[in-house]
Each structure stands twice: as C-alpha cells, then as structure tokens.
Image (cartoon, rainbow over all chains, first blue to last red; front, side, top):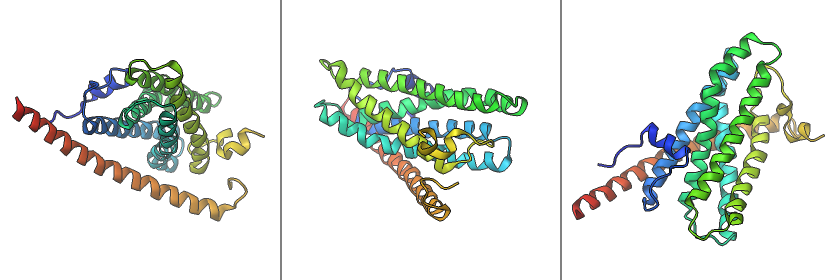
Length: 206
Length: 51
C-alpha cells in the first residue's frame, strides 16, 4: 500500500526538501496535486478573512480566491514549461509542476497563517484593515517566489547554469503575476472596500 | 465596473466561462489524483513483490 501524503510531507516539500530524485512521476503528481489542493484550502480561508466584513463576500470568496489562484497558475505553467524546454534543460515536467505547486503552497501557507490577523484588523481598524490584506498578498507572493526559485534549483540536474534555473522561474512568476492582476479584477469584489486592484491593469498602469 | 470597456454583459459571460474552467480544472485534478494514487500503489506492490 502506498503511504498517503501527510501534511508534514507537504511542509517538507514547501521547505525545499522535495521527494527523492528517483521518485516516480505518479508519486510526484500525487504530491503536487495534494500541495495544490492544500494551497487552495488555505487561500479560501484567507478569502473568508478578508471578506468577513460582509457575509456574502466571505462566502463568495470560498470559491473566488481558489479560482483566482488556480487560473493564474494554469496560465503560468505552460509558459514555464516552454521556457524550460527552450533553455535546453533535461528537466521532467512533473518536477517543474511539483516545484510550482509547492511554491503555491508556500505562498498560501503565508495567507493561511496571516488570515486571523487580517480578519481582526479588518474588523477593528479603519486605516490598516485593507492595507494589511494587500500586504499579506504581497508577502505571500514574495515567499512563493522564493520557494519556487529554491525548489526549481533543488531539482535541477547537476551541471545546470544559474541562468537555466532563472529563465523558467522568472517566466512563470511574470505570467502568474500578470494573470493574477486580471483574475482579481474579474473576481472583484474580493475585499469589501474598493481597492486599486479592482480595475485590473488598466487602473494600475494609467 | 466593466473591464477593458467591454461592458457588463461581456464580463458576466467571461466570469461564467472562467468559473466553468475552474470547476473543470478542479474535477480534472481530482481524477488525476485518483489515477496517480492508483499508479503509485501498483508501483509499490511491484516493488514489494521484487524484494
């Protein structure tokens, strides 16, 4: 019987201790999908926290926030795979998918950990509630980017140059951020108060 | 508010399509997980039989 994937295994993966290099593609896929579903659960929790000012927004965020993350990730992954192939690297697609899924988990862990403080500030501070919500997203993106960089480098074959790690990582991050801005605008309102992100790239870049 | 000046109806359709794609992606992920879990289980049985 195959051992199931525990939360500590997911945490180890997010911390850069990925599965054994000889692990089968089926096992890597299983790990990547578990990380992805765990990330969506944590993101939904954060969505409830930032939408807690209005029950309807909080309930809608259970669907909207995981949607925004999944769709942005699906937009970013093909570009990353293409960049990896064009850089001439012998790197399994499942390895890159696992690195990406664990980076999403890393970012979502930040969102989940900050969800209670975001919720309490949202209800008790008129000045910093929304700012803290946006700051938590920025922090999650920074942590996710770092985890992606480290996990792509950790699975890189020996003899890989730094540039070959950087190209697919930067491409995926740029595509993810670009898609995220537009999906957030499409899914708005995610926060009860209007933000600069509600209008998408048109409002962010005048 | 409409995005890209396309109007509210366009945005409503776009939202519906994106929501449908997300639901399909989650279902596909769940199916893929089941297949991967079964394949991993078979690999583990093979490994145990070889030992």
